[in-house]
Length: 154
Image 1 (cartoon, helix red, strand yellow):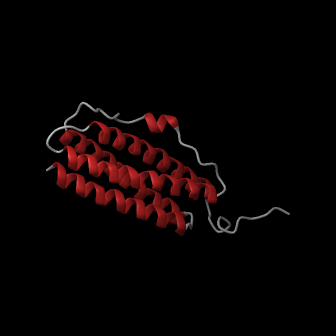
Image 2 (tube, rainbow, N blue to C red):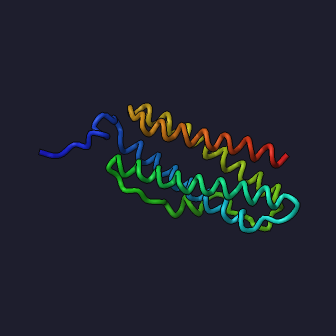
Image 3 (cartoon, rainbow, N blue to C red):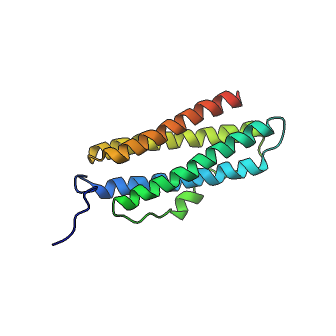
């Protein structure tokens, strides 16, 4: 007789949810690293604003990466980061102006917000309200961040 994980026993497609979570984990980690590089290297009249804003963002996303990874484990899957996804996309160009860095981060947060909204749909289709709630929370963070970045970049 095999043991059934009560948390996953009612989820209709654990594999699709875990895969979407893994993609979100990799994308989150990539944005943590980019935000951190901009935090270290921003210069100019907007230095303090961008320096503090990026620190707030990468700190939140680093903690969120742990929550996402733990959810993957709760679903009975292995939590790994796909190196190709982490290194893919537009790399951090630390020679950019503060305004260019903000616009670059804005685009990444918009993409991650959309990815989290899609994850909500995947989780709901799999009858997984826990993951849907996690993804809703993360979408909210990224949407609020896009608003702040847009307002700061001018």
